Length: 240
Image 1: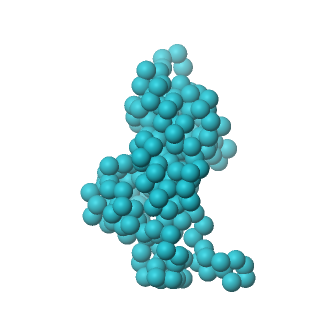
Image 2: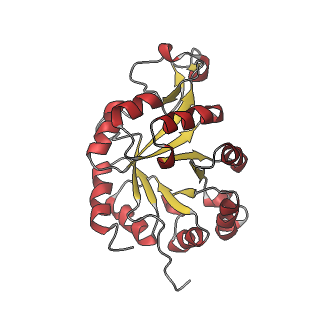
């Protein structure tokens, strides 16, 4: 593939994984606020639904340890620790001038997530991630605007990346999210030719950011916001 295919996002989105988790407790409002102050253009978290229908942001979605562990789905919002924010809390605290990527751990939370984002005027900057294409299909039928992301590994794409990207485009899925080690310039170009964004996660070192920028990915997820912002600010446009 001799012709270099341009990225779909220039500069790429810098997603702060669980907020600025290297400087503040992960998935808390202080971590999200700090990430934005450091220059992150996107925030990342995991979304769960409580028993009283509130969308909350936490990695594991459980409270306590075995054998007394309780799922958030079985608890009302009032029973959760105060540091666990709701999606409404996030928008109230941080506004909506950023991209938001959510791993939707409870698919039943979809409607409430989209409603909260729409109420905040942020649905067009919302990226919802899942590893099941059938789930993404159902979400697309439910909403035409929200961005959908297929999170997987190359080893799980049975038809190969070329056809896999075409399949995502046919299903109106907006992005393919792969581990940083899975990406290559060829794979990114195949996605871009199909009109699918290339997202890379677990991006933890400046050198890795540089490599992914050269591959022309459209978004990176990492823990060290300041490092990602520095490299993208220096190389994110000129090398694309």
